[in-house]
Length: 289
Image (cartoon, rainbow, N blue to C red):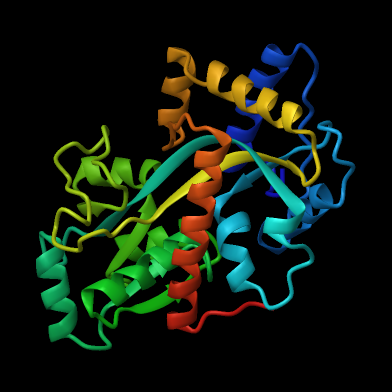
């Protein structure tokens, strides 16, 4: 687990580990190795023996985004890691404070263009999906909304509710209580389909930003060179165990949804997202050491 314990990704990874324990008939132990945007734990797995006993719980951030974001990667994703199973996908929601005089994405774009350099969007930090979703929005909408990075989504949400930033592409679960209470307005979701939790909120693509999609995904990886039979066994175990109704309910509570996929489909998703985020990162001039 290349992220810190206790967070949503760690919780999801531990859920997957428990399901693999049941499916494979042996203990799957979660070891947290956080740091450098997930690169430390990912590098550890990339350099491990390809015997199927050391696996990585990866996300779009450390697999598809980091190669374009970091100037010096300690490993090569495509060369050193083998995708085994896609676990789930999740979307963000574009939210604005209730007091902001916009009620649709079209009105937000108009407002941003009418108030240059006065509209800001908060994120949980430089280079994360809440940041890149906003940069993709700028590129597709022709706006120049200024990014304001925070050390986590909590501080960003405080300033959003206080009106110090005007919008945020937030994780769905953390924004839902404020949306339902009327403190925030949901203008659109970033997935290719509407969220079951916000069925009346359109996708960004439905609002006129054709083909806009900014989702994150989670999956299991092994060191490159792991036998094909082992990778297929892991893929089958994930696809079989994560479909249970109780697991589906737990995934929804974490703001994600199960996405069955073959290894080839997972590989195609990784390649497409790597290309997409590379363009966004280059256009926005984002770079981390």
